[in-house]
Every structure is written in structure tokens, then in C-alpha cells.
Image (cartoon, rainbow, N blue to C red; front, side, top):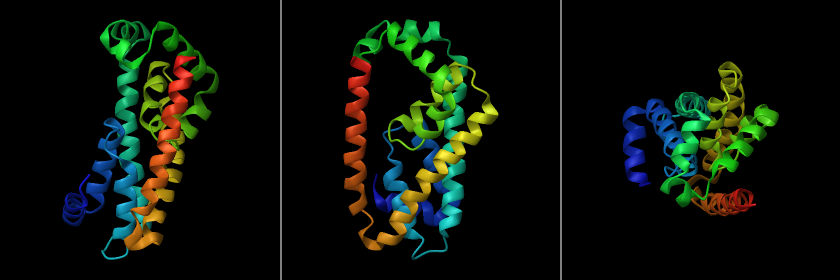
Length: 192
């Protein structure tokens, strides 16, 4: 994402822009929270933004985005998902009905931990909301666990951007490596 566009949006709309960008990032994972949040942390050095305000706005945005995916999962039954994944989408993603059953079983056993820890992990951060909704996990608990995990993640990124200052982009390579490792591990988990 272009930092010029980010700067303009954040300068014009402040915390609201941060909340909306992060909500979108949760719904459309290709929009990278790492860039948005580390850059917003950097902007706290030269603008009227404050670290705590950025943390609160980004956490609210993330939880709103997570709730939209939770609702999508809530409305999407396992049977409907199996039907979707039995076609080209399933082949493309290498998912089948057994994977869905495993995921739901895992989530029923480890739902709270999965939500909290999942909000700390790139890629999983967004996806964890869907099985939470599908299993009808208590939405109030979901909001609390998502808020806590998200606040930790956001704080790390925002403070990294703030303390690295003009060198904020250096941290992105670390997060890119971390994300690559997570995606590879997820791939192995899904295949096995």
C-alpha cells in the first residue's frame, strides 16, 4: 500500500481512517496491517496522532472487521461451506470436507485459545473469525478475546513504527519473514 495514500487518508480523517483501514484489512487480508500500523506509529512522531489513540482506533477497526467475518461464518453452515469447497474453490485452496470437520472439531476444543492467539498471527488473524461464527462461539467472548489479542498485535506494530521512526519500514522484512513461515506451516498443516 502506498504511504502517500496512507498519509493523505490519515492526515485528513485521523483515527477514523486508521479504524476503517484496519477493518478493511481484516476483511480483505491482502491489505497489510503491518504497513498500516507501523506507518501510523511513525506518524505519531510528526502529527497530532497519539500512540494510545492509534492503538484504540486500530483495535476498534480490527474488531469491527472480525465481527463482519464472524457474522459471515455464523450465516455460513458447515454444509454450505462443504458445498463451496467441493468445487473449484476447494481444489484451488486444497480444502475438502474432512478439513472442515477437523477445523470445526479443533475449534470446539480450543476456541478461546484459538481466537486469542490467532489474533496475534498474520493470515490467521482474519480467518479465525469464520470458524468462530460457524461454531456459534459466544459473540461477547469472541469480542473480548479478539480485542485482547488484537490490542497486543497492534501495540507491537504501532510502537515498532514509533520507535524506529523514519526507519519504520525495516521492521516489515521481519514481519514478512514471519508471515511466510506461518503460511508454510499452515500449508503443511492443511496438507497433512
